[in-house]
Every structure is written in structure tokens, then in C-alpha cells.
Image 1 (cartoon, rainbow, N blue to C red):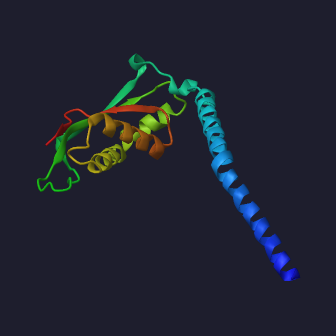
Image 2: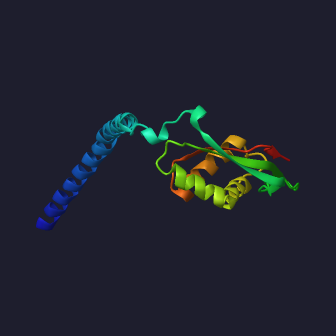
Image 3: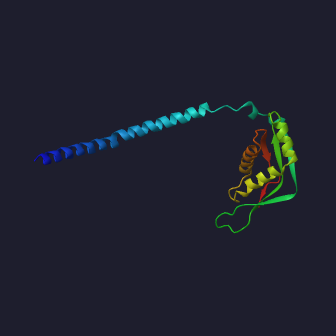
Length: 171
């Protein structure tokens, strides 16, 4: 008889546990999710406001930029990736690369000299950036942004602020 009473007590406690779990899932959890979403939104807004301001090194005037032109003897053709289902070969034609330097940057003289002595690295980075695109996804601005980022990483500098791609043509 005692075993039956113990079994009934265990069953009752299990049912109470099940009911409380259901209450927890259906009433408390949605409120917790709403609170969590609110905290995430507030945190993202605060992160936007706390981002560091541009340093003085990043601020420059377009009129102050120094340019270095890399002129190709012949127009350079760079093959593009193929789109799915596209059998035609597509490529980009380039007449040269123009690198814009910020002369107010601390390492301007060193980087400018390095680029002028061995501009092959700039050419390789631009070729690599272009060859990663397909004929439908490539845009000159995307290539320029990608190339500037990689050049800055390669030279570990912020003195190179922009590049231009004269004669940029997708065929």
C-alpha cells in the first residue's frame, strides 16, 4: 500500500512539474525574448554612437592628394570568373592604375617610394581583385574599394587612400 501512495505522490509531483514547465514556456519565455530583443537593439544603437571618430590621418582633402600613375604598355586583359550557365569568356581591359596618396600621412614618404620602386605589387592586387568577379557582378567601384583595402593591408598603411582604373572596360 505504501508503494502505491509513493507512486501517486511521484506522479503528482511530475504532473505539477509538467504544468509549471508549460507555464514557463508559454508565458515567461516570450517576455524574455522581447526583453532580449530590446536589449540587443539598444546595444546596437549605443555601438553606433560609440564608434571611434575618424583619426586625423584618415581626413584628407582631395586637392591635396598626390597621384602615382602606373601606365600599362599595352591594354591589360584580365579574365573574369564564369557565371553559371555562361560559356563565353569575359574579361576586363585596363589601361593603367592611378594610386592616390595622402601626403599628410606619417608614412607617406616611405610608402610612396616603395610603391614607385615596385609597383608590381599594386598591379597584382588589382588583377587579383578583378579576377574574383564575374561579368554580372563586377563594378568598378567594388573593385576599387576591394583593391584599396587589400593594398592598405599589404603595405600596412593608410597613406594610400584611393585608386582609379583608367580604361576600365568589361567585355
